[in-house]
Length: 243
Image 1 (cartoon, helix red, strand yellow):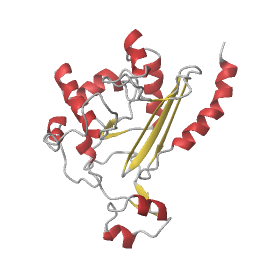
Image 2 (cartoon, one colour; image 1 turned 180 degrees about the vertical axis):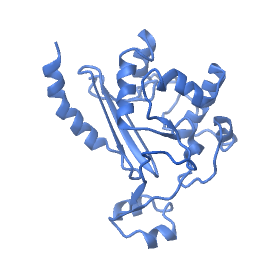
Image 3 (cartoon, helix red, strand yellow; image 1 turned 45 degrees about the vertical axis):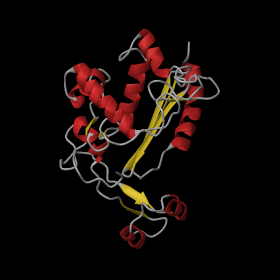
């Protein structure tokens, strides 16, 4: 999947890649992140909205949130401002990702030096990715979501409410919206994501009203530490501005 070159024009096409796969466990008994789960969700959105996933996302999220720079990826299209993608092979990730590195990677990428990442078509993970955007647009999304511009009342609150396992009631550390919740109970919610061609991180702090987003064009370089440092630096400023 990481080096996919095939193009899938719709969630239904991407679904056919794994529709016959077996489940990892009985639903409701465990939690694991799954790109395939979000492709299923994209199919459900198309059915509920009676339009394509890209159209529904634009109408329901991108335009209301003012996310003008966020768009579906297309590897064939010349997109102004598109960042190049890089990979840095280290001794640690060479061992960590053993089996992913090809002979060409190992011979052509000196350790600890940026190299061009492989061209990848991200449409295999429609619903989980396949979009280009900016940190500023992610902040607009967070502010609009917490401000009630996308969901209101109990629906907005449920996006950040803890979601226990259905079978046992055990906590999962996540919300129904997929956010990773702060274990200290402060209500801080985080999203982190990576592909071979880039990473992002986003944090929403309802108490201070802060939304922070960071993006990287280096493979699997989840900017979690930088995200936390920026959040901590901004908290005193937000506190001074609070009424």
